[in-house]
Length: 365
Image (cartoon, rainbow, N blue to C red):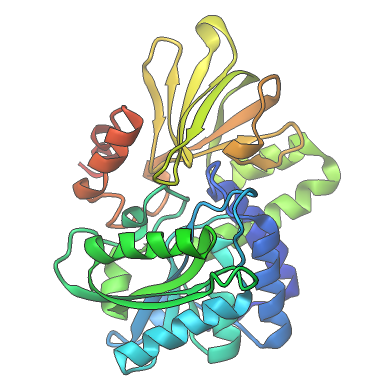
């Protein structure tokens, strides 16, 4: 049976999602806004993929963009609902459920408000357990597909007349950049609903159980909070099956914002022979030791935690801060078909100047 999501689940989703955000972002307050709006207006329901019929339609609810505090973004909860309605109109059929492309500070809750208002189920499946820089990485195998897809986007800064509603049809690779451009025009961040697929396809291509994993992790964090930072970090390791790969003081941060709307660069933790380097493209994509040997690579979960056990996004990191680096190996988490798709890696490797595919694809070789 499905699980009705209630008020106490909101903070658990935000806190668990923040660990799986892997240094990327979203905004915890945006997640809380979406979650509380959903549980106050209706009864959002989390269901396993097994509870849907093979032919049921499922789409992905996502937020697109890299909203810096410097951009005039505005996204209201209703924008996520309108994006779903526009997709249903274009499809000519009802959606039975929504998945998300990735967990994150707010993305774990992207499907909740449409569920509360429209009755679409929050399907316990994700395009990627953790956050990633490109939509392709959460597209559950549609990145290189020639199949005609529908994608919608809704949102924008109303006061600056940047509000946009958009419905696009075409191959995923060709229409995803159109939504990124719309996010930019709208102020940097826009709600989207995209790629309606049959439940049978989602069952075999998504990372199943991704939402309940974030909720369980958040519940463990909340239970440990009164015991302090060390207890929280222990609870995160125990619940995820991960370990602290390294800890130390940030000695160098060299991350730049590119015109393609990505934060790219490196963060060095520790000094001398014990130092490690985090490779960043919005999120943490790899960790190397002082000799350049690879210690961890996407799609493994890589997250920085403060001494208080708070997951820190790349934007929060400053030289001189002490951090713990959490590593949840890729062989113990459910992996979607999109993180095992060789076509999603070249663009990221080119932007970052490091190898990822060789390590990522070895997981299932």
